[in-house]
Every structure is written in structure tokens, then in C-alpha cells.
Image (cartoon, rainbow, N blue to C red; front, side, top):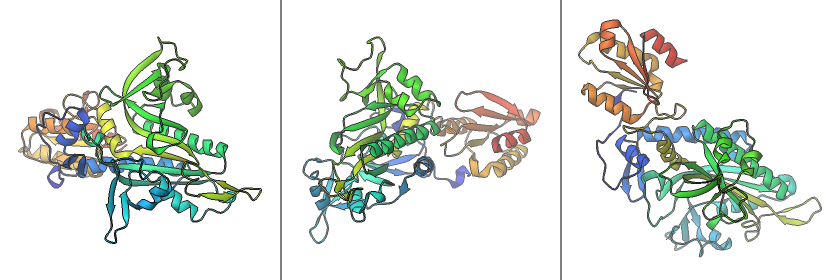
Length: 425
């Protein structure tokens, strides 16, 4: 895409209360714009990243045997009363009335809604397991939304739900999603720690939070020093990863954690996902029942599994940035290549830039502006495309272009044909 045809409203400076890198660069690079406290419009480059993460999440959930659905954002309050959560959830839930005076809620989560769907058709143990997921915007009226899209009031989430006959089946579903999450994060270039956690307002008896460790994280994670190495190892099983101690602050038990004090590390992290074994927390009060092999009535055992898709954008920027901008992993970058012509009045340079753009159009952002070379290079560093093609004096002198690796800053010179072949590979 040509920069002149794309809406990329970059900013030189941001407010002094913007303190974390993901907040600063998501604004400066024109990924999002704030509409109100905790509410953001996703602009073209930011939306491309968001959609790419969605695509990766969909692929892994589909391959894990889950089927995609889409539930309404607004739910009847009576469902929440039925689950006994309406009064206990707190002011984070947005409550309203429709024109007929019926009480409704804007769903901060969808356990009640999915339970209502499944109970309408569930009859026999032969109908189970049922594994469903959606990608849906949620709203939670946070008391203090902060750090931009890292902790907004409205956010995009993948929430999945499993219904099983017995505990063994429920644990298979739990472990299935646990493994899928590690595949998702590895494809995004992230190395999370899966920490035992408190179930909070969702409920249930078993839960793990997935944290990306960064100094700016809001959560505190206690973990064996081996945990991060195991998470990085593509050949480790889910069981091996889960067997190494890691716990959030609420769930940490210093007396019984079983880790030598010299091996116990304390890190800050960003929570990007959470998995719960719910048991019959919702199926019992909401009568999600089936007949078992003996003809007896039983409640389905549930699990729920969330990934914060919009929060992942912030987490990725926190991990992949430097002092001048974002350094997108190639797997989720809005464009693979940024093309910069520094000599806009030179016809050979203009022709070469157009040739490269024509060959790489779908995967490139071509800065076709007449801005100064310094502005163009700074802007491309800010936007963070994995590769930069720089056309300037080297082309005039030697008919070669510069190829810059944004991740490490390394540059090399190559012919136009070699460049195109490499970027198309």
C-alpha cells in the first residue's frame, strides 16, 4: 500500500501521562485513537495487526476441535440472576434497560449466555463433548482504565467454552486448550508463563493465567527459574510446563510452593489469557443437564478459556520495541516491508521504488511522500515493519539498495532483483 493512500496519522509527541511503551507507540504510530477513557478506535494499521492475531487464534482453536459461534453482546439480566452472579459481579458490568423496561447487561463475559444455548439442545451423554468459541467485543467498566489498549474498558476477546460428561473429559478439554494457547503464543513470537491463579468472579476450582513477562506488567508472578526455559522449548509437553511451579500473587503459597528460595524468581507480567475449570458452577444453577449411560440426570462439567486479543497487541509492543519505535515480529506485522525512497527528485530512484513496490505491493508499505529523508526514516522506524528497503545514494552510485532488519538494525546492500526474490520467498 502507498502511504499516500493509507490513513496513518503518526504523532511526534504524546501526553506526559502516557508512560508505557505500548501506549506511547500505539498512539504515535497511528494504530489507535482514544475516544474516551478506556475506549479506542482501531485505525488501519492497528486493525491489520488485530485481524492477523484473530486469524492465528482462529486457526489454532479450529485445529483443536472448537467450533466458532457468535453470541450477542447484550444479554438478559435474568440469565445472570439465574447463575447467581448478577448482584455479586460488581460495578464493572454495564447494566441497562431496553424500551420495554427489561433489565439487560453488556456482557463482560458469556458463561451464562453459552449455558443458555447449550441447555436448549443437550439431551444425552452422546451429545458431549461440546466445544465452542467466539471472538467478541467485551465491556468492563474498569475503575481506573490505564496504559491504553493494555487495560481498556472495551476489548476484543476470544472466549471458548467446553461441556463434558465427567471430570476426566473436562481435564482433556482443559489440557487441549492449554496446549493450543502455547502454540498461539509461539506463533506470535511470545514466551508466556502459565501460572496457577485465583478464579475470581468467573468461579471454578482450577485456573491458570498466561503472563508475558515484561517490567511494565501489572501482575506479579512467582515462578521457578526453570519455568521460562521450559516455555521456550518447543519440544516440552504441556504436562512438563504445568508441573513447574508458577503462581500469581493471589495464588502464591511461599510455605508450600516446593521451590528452593534460590530458584524462586519474582517477575512482573501482562496477563494475556486465562483458562478455568468451572465444574458445575454454571451448569447446576442453570440446569445444563444430560442423561448419562445409566439414564440418570447429570450436570455437564464446564471449562472456559479466554485470550485478550486486543491486549495481545499491547503485550507484543511491550516485548518488541526500542527507543525509536515498534519492532513487529514478521508473523503479525501490518506489512512485511517498508519502502523508502530518499531521493524523490531522482527519476531512476523513483522508477526503482515503483518497481519494488509493484513486486511487493501486497506485503509492503511504500512511503511515496516528499518528506525529508530524516522524517521518512524516523517514521519507518516508528511504524516498525520487519524489513526496510532504502533507495538512496547507494543506488545512484552502485545500483544497489539497502535492506535494513528492523529487529537488530543490521543493514546490507543488494541488487533490486535479489531483494525482490528474497522478500517474495
